[in-house]
Length: 375
Image (cartoon, one colour):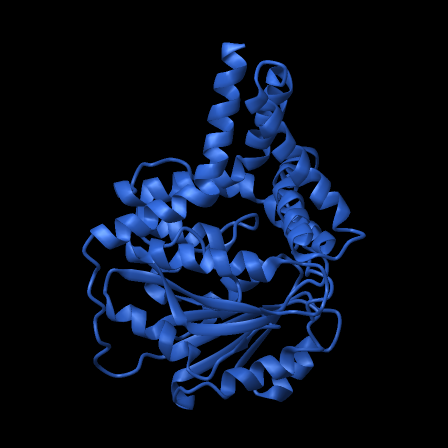
């Protein structure tokens, strides 16, 4: 029974720590530590290339180009590049008519390949990236660029807000929680992840990645290993449509998680070599433990079932775990917010295990797939 107790309390403790304890520790460290002063941008505005990877985006690509042209930035210093990844609709035509400076009509090779192609032909000192369905605030680009006044900063991600389509998905609540963590990480070792809607990297620091990787996860840790910083600029905001249902979010994250194995293990995210101690702590707390959550939940539940007859404490802890699963199941028929949050948590946690299973069965993911209902 001692072994079961160790497994239960260790697994449960790590789960509580990564979801609740870690943000509190970050907040304490940020309060105790000295914050890096924010330099004021000086000198002329840099030339920027805004790269949009697109696959069959005829419904939104013209609006995206128009949104880029409406940014508060000198038109002569902003190069808009649309990299069409094997689009079979009118994406290329409409991007050209809308006024993109460069439109690449590429064969279907995946999002990263399209972004690499866009970066290769870009002329900007800074490369900004956005999803085709993301709408940037007028000042978003300037807010991103302000962070580059610090010479140590190589990558900057902005804040994405999701427009609610009235469905069951609770991704918006998750991202509000994530943005708090991201702000705290940024003030310490640097962010451990970004988002595809709004971010920028110095052209000199751009890393051509393999097809299974993503800028969101790979750039922050790879640049950290090179002595560079990845930060969060909350004033740089963009808006995207949210997948309507939690089930749709599960499918989206399952596809994403299929490539996580390559980034986490093969590309060296978990190796502390090259990290500063504070960044290694962030990676372990925010990434490693999050991706281990399905295993930790399984271990905690299995050990709890073995221990349930030993003490009323284990009856209570089993009731908590069963209550979470029951709440998630009831959310399909009772549309209450707490139940929907429980369902979101259970399905998103399960998506990590499902994505790893897909990676084992099907290998490295190929071409990207857009989530339904976000266009």
